[in-house]
Length: 335
Image (cartoon, rainbow, N blue to C red; front, side, top):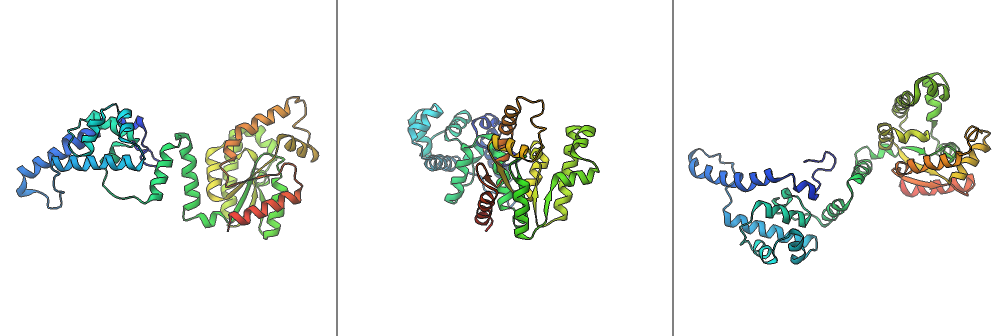
């Protein structure tokens, strides 16, 4: 019931998992506390909170429901319809006059899009900014939450200043990572590191032989060790990272959390033209559907590349034009 990444996520499904909590709150905690206070008053713990009387509890609950409805800008009629209860019953509840059942509370909580824990939560006035963030997260699909957590950790963690000292260029081969990375490192007087070359040094063989001997999984394991070593050895640097790093989640997360990442991208035709201009025709050799394959790879990786801190499209631009855009964007974002 507890999401390890963002804490409680108030979805309707989570309400269906909570009848035991409601029972404890409604039928155990309050009743047992009252019974304990009356029968064991001589030995009661002086730090124990005073039991809440039924009337006071209903007033608190009514006020809480009304407050949550107001925060979400929902009318009483809308909540009543969503919860499948009469508007009169809801009005009585908000006035502190309702003797509500557990099932009814669960339906009202679902209609308000809050958890039962939040419904019974302490009456504290949250800052408007925090309420806006909470409402935004409530509307966000579950599959986007990990991305939010990652960005929050990157942008607001204590190590953020150190992370921004290392700039990592990511993207498919032919985007211009090596060319732009070398120019950026020279201008900033920083080491320029190509992770592919570092992997070859660590393994003592070319990339093609690493793949042939160890396969994809073996290569990715070497890539991760090499990346960790490079970042441990260099507090400040510009890196050009192999395009497939995004396919290994643990390695990519490590890169994102330790470097300011820039996705260097281009149109598929540009990728192919630049690779061939370098004299490398392997992508086209015996592959009449090479462009189609390239498009498929780009489409599959694009959501991952978009996790980078910023993007730079080099399509149709000269090296100098792309470099000027890169410098300007970095100056704005890294101030």
